[in-house]
Image (cartoon, rainbow, N blue to C red; front, top):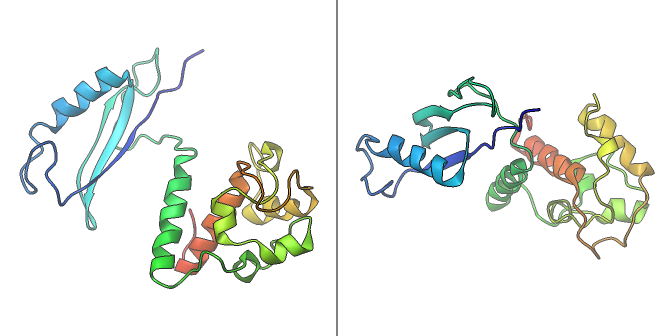
Length: 195
């Protein structure tokens, strides 16, 4: 059995010096820096993209895709990024809040018609902030989403049958479906899809 490759997603914001180099200079020391970091952190493979505005300044892969195999990582290698998408979701929602398109405390039901929880009062009160802070009253049940071939509407539709394990907003309980709902709200507000 092979251990999965530990991956790193690196986003560099151009506008400050990178590794002591001024913006606009070629990434002459970048390759050596990445390889040294991989050795220090014992990372077998990773992919990096450096983006400025709407342009990719650099993309490339380093190392191998899976321990025990020789398949190299390149700029087209796909990695599971799992819960790092929560940061993307929160950042995208925050950008739309800053633009006045979304509100942290507006009811989810206004943005996602058909979003129903076990308690009708909670359904009417739950907000984007609640979804993003994992305080919906129940934790993540993987059987609702992991390894199933459901569309968003299907697994969210099952939430009405999920009884709470705590009172609304009283406890933190990790919840992937809450984040999926937040991503869907954000995508719809932006006029696109979350994918």
